[in-house]
Image (tube, rainbow, N blue to C red; front, side, top):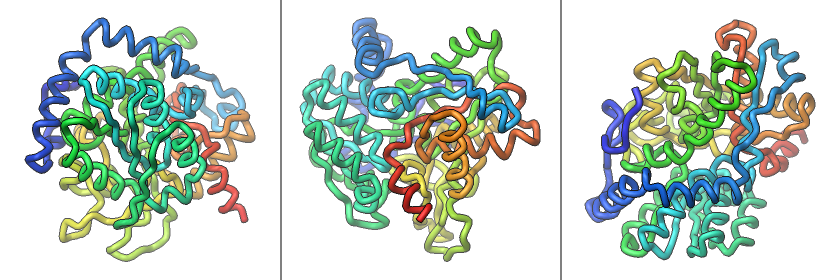
Length: 395
């Protein structure tokens, strides 16, 4: 079921739905990535940065207290311990290195929760490449610490005040910028979304997560896990941990944001569960599952976790959901907050609110036995960035 980068689509999803002016840039990026993805020199240099800069491999931790509480053996893939506090650096180091190999002088990107933006800033500083980040104005307020971190590393943060002022609109503005600067600029997509080759390329850079899990769980248990659970917005941490297990007898659960659970109007979707609730459509250069109304207009998504606040999902995840290889599910804001506190209290680990959605699903699904005996949860990021949000909810 694995698909190579040379194919532009995953079933009927994917493709390149972009203005003609961007096609030369996408063709160049595809050609250059195919050239270097298996190049020994490129990969040796990337391995160096992943090891000595990012701090890989990240641990696979047996959560004893959480396992006892939830009634299933839980291992946590500790991407929160990667430099910068999230899995995002795996991809930005790969793309920054590719930017240098392509001879580009500038990086632009979008960010939601600020973790991708922070990872871009870190990679840009490490490689000495000028970096500018588009971020929804709403997200700049709820993730002020990450904005400051980006600025500390010499990155310019550009607030986006159009539309819902969140990740969707930040991507729109970044693409507009790229359309006018393709000769000197690389657009560093942060998730497995967008036009080909981004979904496959980002997946490949993030697959280091699942490759490590395979080795680590065999060392600890002598067998593969029964289930792997990961939160899913655009889907980079999910595809990163899922992909090396696609051809194995391991259940893969993609946990989306179910939002507040409040009733809403047609104009506003108080959730971000594109796999569960979305319909086929085109968004940000790809055909995928999208939250949209009957006229095809994109609905506003909403989640307590800024990184899950996205109206679409990666096309490969849409394809894997249709074929039944992954199991889409969701957790509500209140459930994620409860799981957030569980992990803090029981294990001394403060998870990102995004990751808390995955923990929450394990909590409610473990009783039914659908997860099996051994479960791996991808803790995609740490929760320092979310403390103001959590404290605000408690008031």
